Amino acid sequence: MVTWLRRLFVKDYQKVDDEKVRAAHGKLAAWFGIITNFIIAGMKLAIALILASQSNWVLPMALVADSVNNFSDMGTSIVTLIGFKMASKPADKEHPFGHERIEYIAGLIISIIVVVLAIELFRDSLDKVIHQSTTSYDVLAVIILAVSVALKLFQSFVNRGLGKAINSLPLKATALDSFTDAIATTLIMISGILSLTMHWDFLDGYMGLAVSLFVAYSGIKMMKETMDPLIGEATDKGYVDKIVKDVISHPEIKGVHDVLCHSYGPTKYFVSLHAEVDQDQKLTDIHDVIDNVEEEVHKKFGCEITIHMDPIAVGDPVVDALKAEVKDELASISKDLMFHDFRIVKGPTHTNIIFDVVLPFDDNITEPMVRTHLQRRFENRDTQYHFVIHFDRPFTE
Image 1 (cartoon, one colour):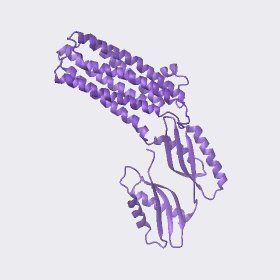
Image 2 (tube, one colour):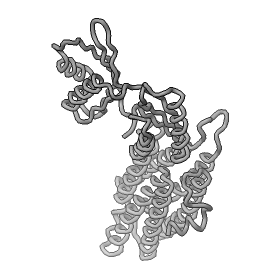
Image 3 (spheres, one colour):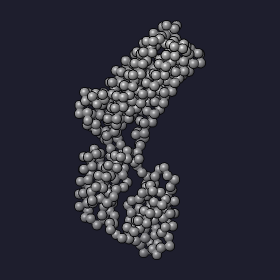
């Protein structure tokens, strides 16, 4: 179904890395949300007014809350439409990295609106519980609620499919919101059925509280998912691993480290890394290789990449032996400890062993711990070794 909709409304729908194609997907999702949410909210509001007219104009708060929530969903679809349109704007002088992060801002605005509405709905429902207000439902109300649940589940299905197709956080967040809305409406429908069969007319306020909590949960989750890329989350490890694998597939490159990947939107990646090369190789030759690798990665992965060359000794038995000892000692501390840029500088009184160590964020490994282990390993040798260590942190997951 989702593929059919994409094929029908999105030109070149399979080229999801193209900014115009992403914008077309966002436009499709937004208009779909505007139309379906208007229908759902309109039906619920109409039934709420009908029920109120039959009970001295005491509004069924759970139903009104759900209707207002759906109208807010329609509003957020409009925000999504504007967000995708603005995000597809090309780079300019003021924004040289493009405007794709507006897509995240749109998602954040949506989540804030949802949380604010949840607070208001909770307050109104709590007031109804305190004053012990009652609401009676009829068969038509239950039928419309059942139709609303089906439409909300269909919304969730479509938005999840579109969000997955273009890897869009706002659309995935909207899919989650639609699913929680379906659960909330199901609770109200159960309340209506119990009102019809058991005459439990006191449940409306309690169901309104439950609905507002569902809405708040959805909004807070959406807020976190849209704030993370704005703050600066780690880039997907799978994406970075593919780039590294492509780079080291060239025999002239002996290793890769210090990989930095900055995201300025779902399709805007800027990558830099250090490539280890044989120090005895001719500089102009290896520079030509690096240029070719940068061009290859740019075409294959659609990112801007800069590669820094790090010359290392290749085939030196002394360097290789010391490197193997350092590797063994670091592994004894933690298998997750990685090191790079290994080299030695010999002096008249001592030899400097110079390298970088990558410390994981989630391990209780400290810099003094690493230094102490290495000093113990290399003490009481004929040659006096000093360690010059630079500590890094991983920038990918």
